[in-house]
Amino acid sequence: MTSHAIDRADIADLRTRVRGAVHRPSDDGYETIGFNVAVSRRPWAVVDAADAADIAAVMTFAGDNGMTVAVHSTGHGAIPIDGRSLLVRTGGLDTLEIDPAGRTARVGAGVRWQRVLDESAPHGLAPLCGSAPSVGVIGFLTGGGIGPLVRTVGSSSDHVRSFEVVTGAGRVVRASHDENAELFWGLRGGKATLGLVTEAVIDLLPIPELYAGAMYFDGADAPAVLREWRTWSASLPVEANTSVALLRLPELPTVPPVLAGRMTVAVRYAALTSRDEAQRLFAPIRAVAPPLLDAVGTMPYAAIGAIHADPADPMPVAEDGCLLRELPEEAVDAILASAGPDVESPLLMVELRLLGGRFARTPQVDSALCHRSAPLHLYTVGILAPPIAEQVPVAVAGLVETMSAYSDGYRLPNFTATSDAGVTARCYDEQTRAWLRALAGQYDPRGVLRVGQLAR
Image 1 (cartoon, rainbow, N blue to C red):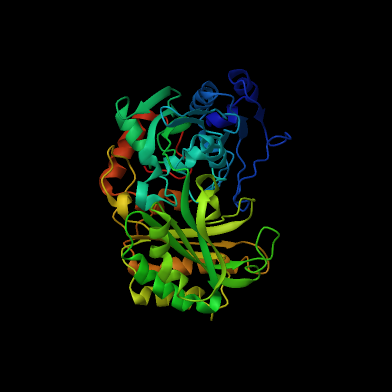
Image 2: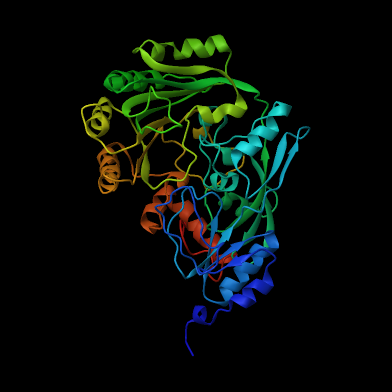
């Protein structure tokens, strides 16, 4: 006999409750590989959900047995979970229905952005994805969604029509601006605090193509490029979007030889203007130094992932970031001192992403996504591979600490993969945290979702 409910949990009982496969650690289907393979995920059991009813049954089983429930789609932003949790895999929830007339898509929790891009393109329509189309749709949207066109269209979560969600209480609920509005508010920015989203209806915009891409410079030109980008980006109109990244890309088949095994600087750009105007706006960057590779031009929207060219294959990484309130010359100097051409840095990438524009405006339907007034976001990542594996977390933390002089400590949910409640709290203002906490008590009374990245 034991006083702990989890010790009495019956795997056979769980298997009778769901249609999908259930895997214990000794089963072949148990292993769950996400994008960040450095994250340890050893749950009590893994459930391949067949539908929303399966997830509802998992929630109820977890509550009955003193467990928590975590979710896995692609494993981007994953954090460790242990044997006190059940892990729901959503790969089987692969619904995708494009409505060209209504300019919407109904998207299941197992769908990645590239599939939505490909199936929307023949209709001249565009989903507002992030920089990496290999990421799952739902996790990106519940974290707010900061895409390559964020200044022009705002947050991607502002373009969600409705969610189907399973609450921690095991109820399947529809949430929109006029149905369960407080839940709809919290799901857009609150990650999985209030429930696991099984599908979403999202807007598709009429954007068949855009003027966009990336221009790469030699690392020796990093000081000139960063300083010009700082001045140039400050005066861009809302139709133009940009980020700049210091890169140290390894020699891999997926990396162009001219960029591999050396330090480079990439200026990313996307403009929803005429081609001539987009070229005119980008001209100062083209003139700053001779490029190693110029990949900026008119492209189909479905190829939007080429702007950032983020890796899609699983790898072990350490990552962190923060919102910046300003970018004075001293901040640029600090970045160069930490990861510039004169430094032996273990960091794969240091990125500055310009925000503002429509992202900073009050959305038509309010959400839990906070800190919209921040003008910039800093993000850095390194690969945890020998011989630099031990150096990478130190370098990541060191850069973010250095840049804290230019930050109020605020963060974005999709760039904050942590179970540290104090760190997660910085994604929200005090009022938003209080509302999310109150809603969690309503929609997850047994604390089934009290695992991972939470706002409580």
